[in-house]
Image (cartoon, rainbow, N blue to C red):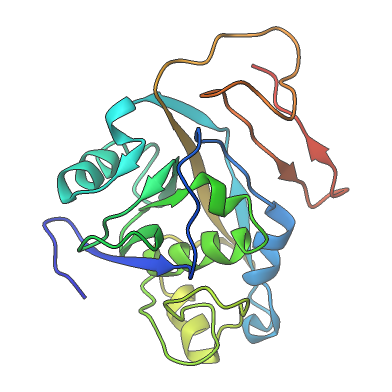
Length: 226
């Protein structure tokens, strides 16, 4: 663990990390929800509520390779303190120290985290997003097969003790028996995406915004109008 100026930053590792690409947003909301409503949550599932995607022009922050860059990135937090800002960039090579196998970095007990776009779009994307959110919720790395193992391993399980810690986090909001976490996705780009009147297409030109949602209601893929 590394005690930094703002919060403790913890990272996720993959055995292989791909080359940098133009950043984009991919979120499978239904799969995200499933992680935080698994059996260990019992009668206290936590709904993951994805807010409207935002775009920020910071060409120097597309590649996170130093403390100064990640500190500047997390300073762009959107929303109240009990909402999470989820940043999508090209590469994350620094999280307490330099490692080119990093694919994400989150503040433990914080409200910001960052992931590589290409990895978030992969088959372990939900595991990556949930893992880094786990750090925001106060969870540390663990050994063995678990969501909080430092290497992404295809296992998204959480223990009863981990769930208890999650439910005590100030990021988990509650109204009666309903619990939820607000997450605001933020795309970092090198230049602003031109405004269009028609729905955005699934694949956009370099630097443009792609947002994939599988909504809980019908699990449809939805494109966002800009």
